[in-house]
Amino acid sequence: MKRIESTQNALVKHWKKLVTTKKERERSEEFIIEGHHLVEEALKTEGTVLHIMFREDVEIPFELEESSIQIIEMTKAVAAEISETEHPQGIFAHCKQPIPSEDLYLEWKRLLYIDAVQDPGNIGTMIRTADAAGMDAVILGKGCADPFNPKTVRSGQGSHFHIPIVKGDLSEWIERAKLGGLQVIGTGLSQAKDHFTVDAMPAFALLMGNEGAGVSDEYLEQADTIVKIPLYGEAESLNVAVAAGILLYTYGRR
Image 1 (spheres, rainbow, N blue to C red):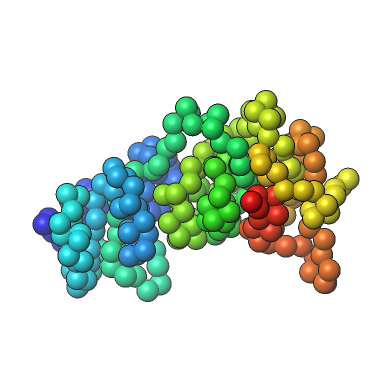
Image 2: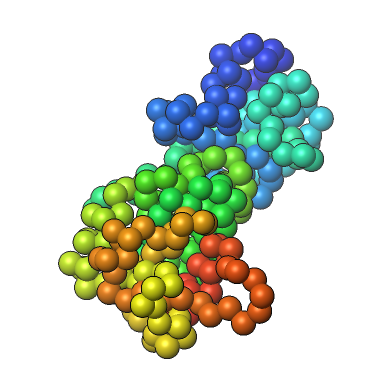
């Protein structure tokens, strides 16, 4: 087992950049996860985990000792350099970002499109919800929070390893959906139907928008249907991730 004691170690510096900077995550197509549950989920996908890192006072589970993946023990000072949680569990993994093959795109029939949602927690929750609802993929448009931001990954609770996540041009993805026979459902207030008046469907793309501004008018003009969730109380709006959950289960029920 390798042991790292210095915060100036080159690998530790790389890990810290992966935790703190989007630029490094995009350049390397790698990211860091923290906590027992996320590490367990990552290990279920062969080839995803590059290193498993343990703080020196944490016991290594027997099954990981038998793994072919390199295990690295770290001092408490080194672990603190790469930890982002309030109560760290002392276990991390250095992972490759799952990048789906474009050959799979034509097979996807249930898609969640996200337009400029900026909060990492909302993005992670929507990825997790899309996974739970049995969607085929999540497509993130311009202006969205980085899906591999540590907060996004924690909110996703392992779903990053279950459902494909693609960053792309939503206008192109809307056109792709329509050519593939998918109904594109936009969300908004103008000329919108109550969501429960639109039936479940086998193939659709649901378009959710920015926390304040909603879905861009450009994308709504391309949608086949625009829906809204009626509010019965005094709240002005629903959290975008909560709204996505309601709509994904409305149209994706089987």
